[in-house]
Length: 110
Image 1: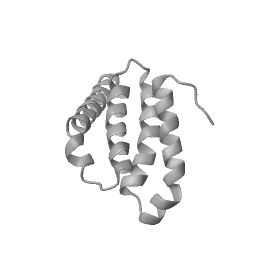
Image 2: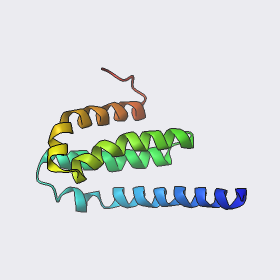
Image 3: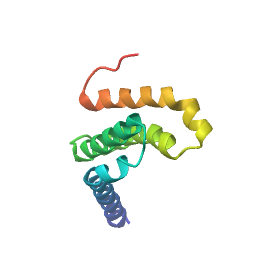
Image 4: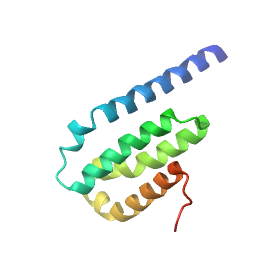
């Protein structure tokens, strides 16, 4: 059973690797489809930083935490209901910037 679970874990990490590679390789195609410059920048930053996290030498659990912290605000801003996007726009951006600081090794600022 442990072997099968280890195989599944490896398969999941391989899928994450392939997904983040696709995101960074194709960012010019999908990011340009949004009109506001802020959304384009948000998409580009997400793709680049998600790829950096996957390639990093951090512990797997830390990678998962950081990827979740990056993905939740991005998912809400790009795929959430309009009222949800508007309501959480500032908080999502602040959360995202805080996670970027964590990735870069900078101390979080309130």
